[in-house]
Image (cartoon, rainbow over all chains, first blue to last red):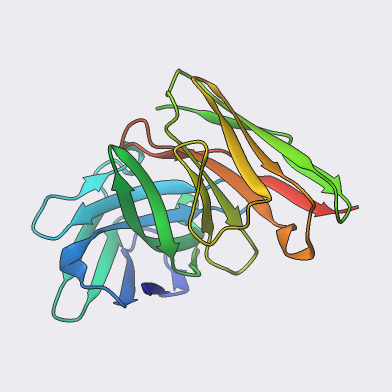
Length: 120
Length: 107
């Protein structure tokens, strides 16, 4: 059973880099696609990025080049860095697997999420 | 981007009721829609993929339908654990987008 757990800083100063990690158990990073999503307060879910080991990540264009996703197969963790953080980046951040078959894709399992607040 | 619009945004119902949640896509997306259940503080859970396929382990009181631009999630015989937020998501392209969510609470 695949399980994921996010870790984040809790509080980030505006203009700094928001760094997140996701620990994975029950699966090897090399075997699946991995993703990041977020939910700002009072708003809907937003897909941020996904990638597969040894392939280039894909990012939501709304992040305007501020995001960098990476995988560490030795630690079985993956990461998201979001530079130049603003209050608009305040959200609960989720990591999740990205599964699929026959051109259909869905997210799951997910981690429980971690709240990151961008504020001075 | 493909916009996903859910209605209603909130819904009150009683145990044993049947409820229907609607999701409308801003363009035709065949059956490339998934539905998730999200309880506060917990990981979202996939319920339905490809518009009508029930994820393994999800109770059969959950069902999905639709194609093109209009999709529905129906929950029959509401149980206490069903009171949560339900979210649709399109996978027609890999710029995945979600609906705003529909919060279902106990009347």
